[in-house]
Image: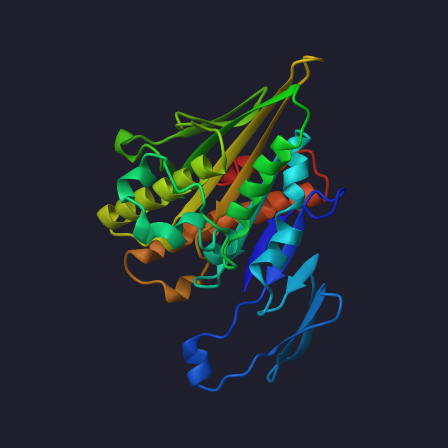
Length: 316
């Protein structure tokens, strides 16, 4: 299964949700059976091992393999909208092993993919998409959240003016690459200022509606595929992070708020023993960055002032 970190509780700094994937075709053909039981209340599940017995695990919420995308979004994604509009930074992270459903959970089927046959590909890269693109039942957390975010901004008083800027970056072998300007051929760095953590040199696109943001996601995904082909690497060996920056100004009071949302689709984790040849150093670096992320999350949940953010590009 895949793990999604969100913010369901108002007081919680980190929430962890577990989503169990359905059986694969291979598992079904072998007549395998599930060894996991999700308990009533959806916060606890049991793994029944014939060799080692039963083990119980607890999360903020557990989604069984038949849970809908809408249900997952309701608990793991929707609460971030109100936090963003309140000026609170948020991060939603999809973490799990290879082929566990991370990208499906976070992105799913993007709205305009349903209309791809009727849409000129060049218009997608230029940021122009069909205005009537509907929401598919397989639509993931990100597009649902983006839609609700713009609806939420529309419902705010007319005196509050919003500016939305988006960036899309990838991290491969501890190097940050701009997915919206891949031809720039430069490695980006990270710094922190009064507005928060910034990626120096990352391009930002001003977005006026949901359609603009979805177009950028498609553009970044297309560029990531090209880069992966050129470098002869798989896209599941790369951490990809889509960043939404929301700035708001109240023209009556002069109050300003700035908040950022990070949507992180992490590279798949795996054991070093499964890696061979070129993928061995990749696996070591990926696992090191995921370990660094775990250390930061542990420090944050324990309330430590000095969290080890600088251990990896993923966490700084």
